[in-house]
Amino acid sequence: MNITRKNYEGIPMQKGTHPQAVRVGNLLFLSGALARGTDAEFGDIGQQTEAIFQRIKHIVEQEGGTLDNVVKITNFVMDNSPAATEATQSVRVRFFGDNLPASTRVKVAALSEPHLLIEIDAIAVLDD
Image (cartoon, rainbow, N blue to C red; front, side, top):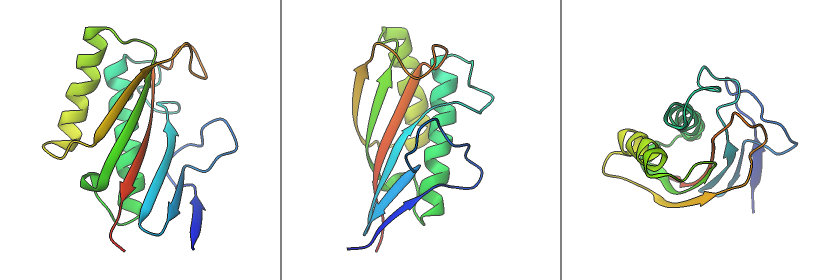
């Protein structure tokens, strides 16, 4: 079995020692992404969500796929209010359209820095 651990040019490294993605065959597992290092880093949860989906899109495209290949996302959020949920869901619909991935939303006590409001990881199934 071929396992490839990879970081991607154009995406700043997050804190920690993990790769940005691990590919096993046609499965691509994306590590949790934050808006750190983007213009949205100190923005609201919707702005941070948009920056994160841009990163996810970049990684999946570098592996030959599109956002249509993303089958699962997990959202780790600091704010689970209806307004915050609507903000993140509207961005998700804008990026994925009718091909929404399965999704889990978990409210957490903290992320790595207090101004970061959301972290998202993803799983994509790519063509062989």
